[in-house]
Image (cartoon, rainbow, N blue to C red; front, top):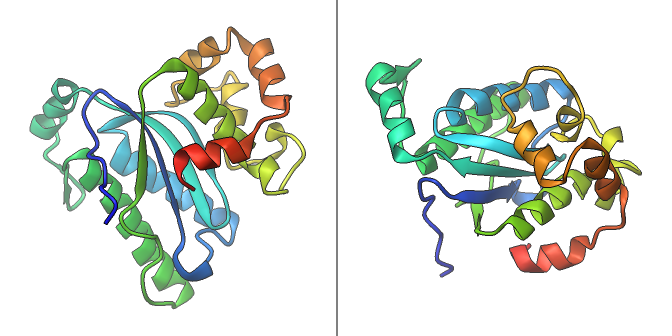
Length: 203
């Protein structure tokens, strides 16, 4: 059995997963928006987000799990969000996926698991791979034939990175790793070896 890495406080992770049995995770725009709303509800308390993409049957997210000391005040000041106590980072991700799956099955009158379990995670421990994962995430729609360039796909953080609108995304840090907006855009439009990253991630 493959060992599942624990989400450690203060570390960067590439979080990714697929739907089970060839199901679609997202069928209509409202599905994408609903997932993002749940993501903000459950994950913003335990992690900062650096990049994301939602595809029809899978997703990729780059996060840094907050330091424990930054999470514990929320546990004291806001012990309950709705009917959900704030848990560990892994528990919060599980709540996200379970809540979305329950709503999805109710809306489409379907049954059964929606996401593969356990959800996949890859520790990212150096700046080179941080940049590679960001390129990989934003180029996923290009790789799968949904568009020709990253800025043509609406359900990723790329458009937020090149925008000036307020956001919870760690945009300044991300763009800074690419030495500014111009380099960020140019690098994203260059040919990128998705297969090499697939192999490294064990996709």
